Length: 82
Length: 502
Figure 1 (cartoon, chains in turn purple, orange):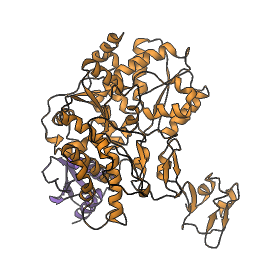
Figure 2: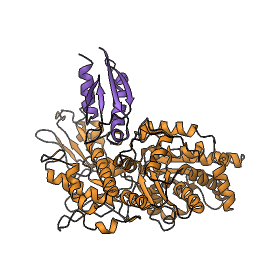
Figure 3: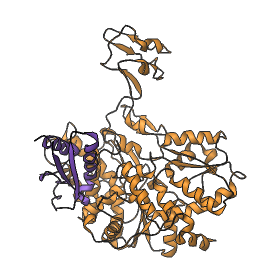
Figure 4: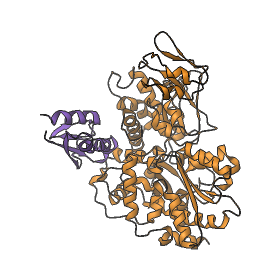
């Protein structure tokens, strides 16, 4: 097991499109899944949110566009074992 | 489903952002026809079985967001039909505010108990034994419940050792605290206007996104564009709603960029109202009225008015915080146009009241406001903001959390009349509010101050919010603590106002 780094955009567009809901789900990982470890960071807008790309989430530096808690969680679960 | 971001949340917000864009550009009439294609591009359905149906539903959502009524399915009309009546710079909203889009409704079965595949057809079958009306019988494959006989007591569900019996409720009806959801001739949900108190909880609880409310976003933007002096009144649950990096000064800066002339806290009105209500309580309870109900939640006040009209006189006649704050603004600047920005759908209805109309020009929700930021491509988190808000007390800001209203009034009473003891009861969710008022009617709440809140958790649980109830509750507490004034009586803006009016 290793710590997965998750960066979530907290810009206004991403917030409207559900970034904070992703933040809440990801923030609970350390408590809810004791065998997983994540480090969550909120980041400023990178300007990629135009054209239906919001919300933007980076998992270990890999950029997920139009992210949902499903796609982010799946990515984290996979990353924490590789 | 409050607190879970679903496809329905996404579509609702995309619709608001699209309407905001249309309002900022010109020629909305023509562009509206293209809007469903911008929100749902391509040829393949994403959410339902057909892209045509998806776009038709989004079309009706767009109409509601413009303030237009839903079109009838059995008659041809353009999506923009009636556009000229709403393409104005003032409020046009008409009842009903909360609408079922009939063809988006999947006609879920009404309240019933079902036996699922978990049934083992066991030898003991306690389900049949405990049923008081002989409605459960063991059939070829499993137990069955005779729906004509069943009285929905739930005993069979409790008795089954395999959890094989489930209660199946329409989510909209389950969320409705006043039993306002009926069925039309096709079994689809239909809102009984005589009962509905416009709390909006069915909107956020329908898993098919079939219910939506009308918006005043378009007309508000037109008023700002026209150059009117529009003042934003922020309800106390606003903190944190626009993301964790969007601090209060940044939100104020964002509102100024949107063209708002000024920004004030609704909590100032809460302070004014809580002093007024403290005085009213001491003066009238129990001599003139047996108890005093708070008035700030419009759905709770409407519940009492519609279902317990003989008790309506016991609900506070003080202005609600929304109106008290607006009145102060308009007394100082009569040309100002006031927009209430909050978590609430029912405020849209309150604002239509003849007595409230002169003070409140528009009502929008936090979801609708963030759509304005997005349409203007304003990133609130990145703004430089200096101007903090200091209009209200800790107690005034705490109005957004359940219990906060009663607490504010009680602390005022304690400060003004230390001898006086007050009993308090409160309820959040309309079904609990209903129980509370029934007890009050029966004389069980005499001498009490009753706080009613329609939304679970208080205003922070409102249908127009973006943040989870838990997070919003914490944010409100932090913001409340940051106020330099503990109670309303410490707030010079609120007490000064009382003196002026006397």
